[in-house]
Amino acid sequence: MRHTVLRFCVYTLGCLGILCLIAMFIGGLYFSPVGGASGAVVFDVQAGSSSRAIAKQLVAARLIRSELAFRLALRYRGASRELKAGSYQLRRDMSLMQILDELQKGHVALESWTVPEGLTVAAVAELWESAGFGTAEAFLAALTLPSFLEDYGSVEGYLFPNTYKFAKGTPAETVFEMMLEEFNRRWDEAAEDSDEIEIGEIKFTRHEIVILASIIEKEAATASERPRIASVFHNRLKRNGLLQADPTVVYALGNPERLLTTADLKVDSPYNTYRHKGLPPGPICNPGIASIRAALHPEKTDYLYFMAIGEGKHHFSKTFAEHKRVRRKMRRKR
Image (cartoon, rainbow, N blue to C red; front, side, top):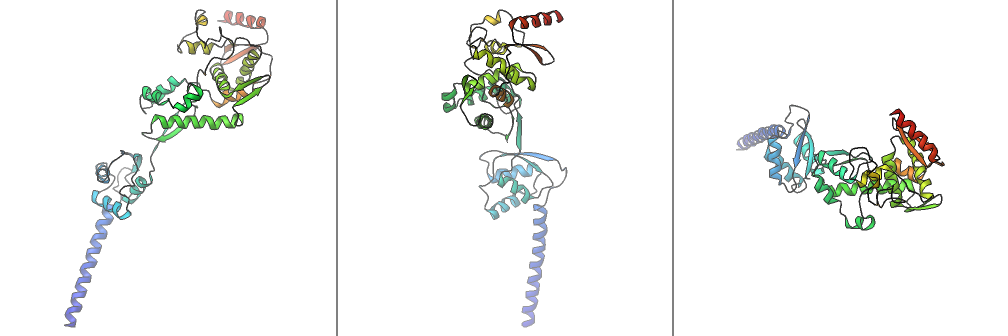
C-alpha cells in the first residue's frame, strides 16, 4: 500500500513537472518577441478602444503572438482600463510585457512641428494643414479662446515661433495654448515680467512692443540689423512721425507676393503706416525673440531712414537728403 501511494505521488509530481515545462514553453513562446525586422512600427490606439480590440490590432500588426496571452497579462496586472490612446513606435523585437509597459505608461511617439519667425496666423494655419495635423479652418477656429481675445482682440503676434512636440491627434486648441505659454515664458525672460515698458521718452504696453517687433521681424533680414532698424522706428515714434513701413501696407493688402506700387501706399487702412502716424492697431506677424528684444532694446542712433541695398543689408540715413541720394544710387544700379 505504501509503495502504491509513493508511486502515485511520483507519477503525479512527474506529470505536474511536465505540465509546468509545457506551460513555461508555451508561455515563453507567446510572451517572447515576434522577431523579424527591427525597425519601428507605428501603432495607433484610438481613444475608447477596448483591450480586446487592442489585442487584435497587435496580433494583426505582428507585434505579439497571442491575443489571449496579452489579455491574461492585462488581467494579471489589473491594467485593462489603463491603456493610453495615442500613436506609439513599437518594435517586433520587444516582448509582450515590454509592449504592455509602453501602452500602460503612455509612452506615445511625439510629432515635431516647427513654426518659423515672421508668419501670420493664416500662414501658421496653412503650415498646420500642410503638416497633416488637420485643416487650416479647424486651426483658425481653435484660436478663439474668449479670455485671450478679450485681452488682446487678436492672436496675431502671440503664436510664438518655435519647434513644438506633441502626441499625434493633439487638438489644435492644446497646441495653441502651448504656443501662448511659450510666448509668455519668453516675454517674461526678455521684459522681466513687465507689461508696461519705458524706453527713452515713450512708455509702451506689451501689445505695442509686440506690434513693433512684428514690423522689425518683417523688415530685418539679418539678426545684427534688428536693433538698428528698431532705433529708426523708435526715433520716428519719438517725433510722432509716420513709420512708413512697407510690411504694414503688405499686411493691409492681404500679403500679396509682389512689389508694392505707388497706389498701394495710398490704401485706406489703419495698417497703412504711410497714411497713419504711430503704430498700427495690431501685430502684422508672429515675431521671434530676437525681434522682441530689438524692440525692447533698440540701438542708440540718430537714424530716421533705411533702405535695402541687397544681400539682406540696409543703408541707414540720418536725413531725408541722404536717404534720397541712396535711393537714386540704388535705382541707377538696378
